[in-house]
View: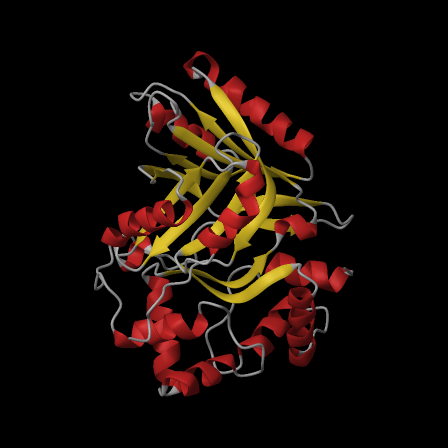
Length: 335
């Protein structure tokens, strides 16, 4: 990639405009004499070459009244590919990673309704004949990161807070209405890469562009949309290290410790999740990325120092392969 591609990736992971010609506005904001058509072409190339996986809205299932959980399975190594094919075929699976642990398949489930999570996990157990460990989020201490490429081409992560305008106290209908559902269905795989993407979305759902833009802005303000921009493939970009660190800490300290860990710049996700005793005693999860496994281990050593005697045991589960990475895909939204 050249300097222009680096600049586009650094600047367009969030904050993409909602207006009649958003790529023209974004190009002007980027500077470097970038033109609208150049930006669109560059984004197409970055997706074609695998540096980006898509470009568009990132939806928040939970804030729309949906369900969201992390799940894990012990899969015999010689069955990993076949099992991944069965799991990934389920439309509720947003991400799936192979990790170097006896619990070697970790996937995220997103559903339109909270009560559908158990049904999805039971369906996967039935299809695979394997037990699924359900690890829903109990508390959130850190969420949101973007990659940043410096002038030397080195890559790392930076914290990315919610888009401006999200107000947790805002009131909104728990479930999407017909227009919301149509908009999610039309954009969850990405925006059309053309000068007037919102016009094309409006045409596809039989609405006018003003209504589409107004509704998207409302969804963004209420946090139904986390951000609008580029979805990076951090492995392809050079962040080959991906360590999910899990910690056994006293339950009466987990909130305080989670907040301390979540405040560290190099932690990209940090949650409290349930234990599953006796085999899984870990209740604090912190995700760390880096250019390689050693860089990740060095960062996790800092977490161990911070936790001190409160660390009653931990593991680092490194990802070995991406099995699926599509982002949120809610099914039956056209119904």
